[in-house]
Amino acid sequence: MSAEKLLRGRVLSFLDEPDGVEDTSVYTYAKDGAILIRDGLIVASGEHAEVALRADSDAEVVDHRPKLLMPGFIDTHIHFPQVQVIGSWADQLLDWLNTYTFPEETKFADPGHSARIASLFFDELLRHGTTTAAAFCSVHKASADAFFGEAEKRNLRMIGGKVMMDRNAPEGVCDTPQSGYDDSKALISQWHGKGRGLYAVTPRFAITSTPEQMEMAQALSAEHPDCYVQTHLSENHDEIALTAELYPEARDYLDVYEHYGLLGPKCLFGHCIHLTERERSAMAETGSVAVFCPTSNLFLGSGLFDEAGLKAQNVRRAIATDVGGGTNYSMLRTLDEGFKILQLQRQRMHPLKSFYWITLGNARCLSLEEKIGTLDAGTEADIVVLDSRATSAMALRMETVTSLSEELFVLQTLGDDRSIAQTYVAGEPVVF
Ligand code: GUN
Ligand code: ZN
Image (cartoon, rainbow, N blue to C red):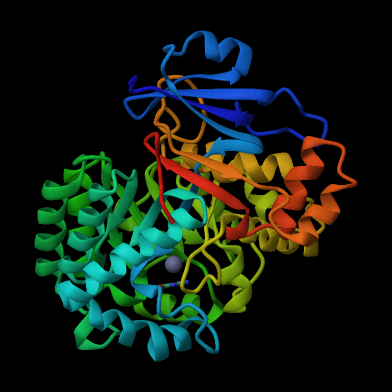
């Protein structure tokens, strides 16, 4: 039996960011399409008639017609220890952190708990069609070991990091500048580049890190320039005010991170809602990434992300769930809420842009576009199979749909985990 798989279905993959509604030059779409997979990589994708010619005669054929095959979705900001925080009845950010989130994260000191939740966390991601995520673990080294161990077992392309936090939180979720450095260093040497795992140096945010800890984060990032940096920035007005009190020398919130050398193309900043002009230009100049977290921003009443303004200033922009501040694992639900946030600001997000964003767009923001986010030959075969008629409401709406853009908009507006018919990780179907 050949080691090859030939998936049949409608095949959609993006080449670039759509410039507007009419921009049909930025994707490839094959109505009678196929993807040929060998050794976890995509060998060819496109028209079935052409791709099938490349397949071994005994390749396994999996017929997904008439479903839509796309690159697996990418979530650029999520908290793995918050799967039992999601849906907690809170006031805004700082109250939510203190009342629910920090107490819950203390449980991850226990390796058994960390291992159980890591497994359930990846089950959820995959059920929702997400094949890559950039995740915050808890402060405990054990939580990151569990995260990467489980990801490796499942051969997942995952980014993660233990949060560094040494003040303004309960003792059970605090490290020290030295232990935060040592644990992060050990995790980098054990997991960064092991299998498909990648490490992110993760100072949680300015409020929970002393200047001494920020220096340690700076040292880690300088010693490991190929690692990511992930943190939070300018999410909530009380958070911004407290940050200014804690870092009185800083010109603004971003300047805290800038001062410690934590800006750059591999630096991911969750939220970025209330940025000043100066902060936006500094982000653009350094290639830093602003991460839009729609369901979280609505749930915590944080504010409205200014996608058009950031784009106009050439700030790189990713999109993410931010579970458990975010309220759904689904990147489709995330797009739907994102659309509404932009709609409130008279910024109209086109469905082609939406599906570009959760695939190639996010891959580019993670500097991983050579590996994931498209169906290009040579990339990793992380694939999602989408059913636009998954519910009776969707099927009814689909009766009047006449174009791909309309179908995508139905998927993002009405779709959720029920629309994920199958997920493939490195060419293997995931059972869920
Ligand atoms: N800021 C610091 N920590 C967090 C967190 O866990 N979630 C969100 N949404 N914002 C944060
Ligand atoms: Zn977050």
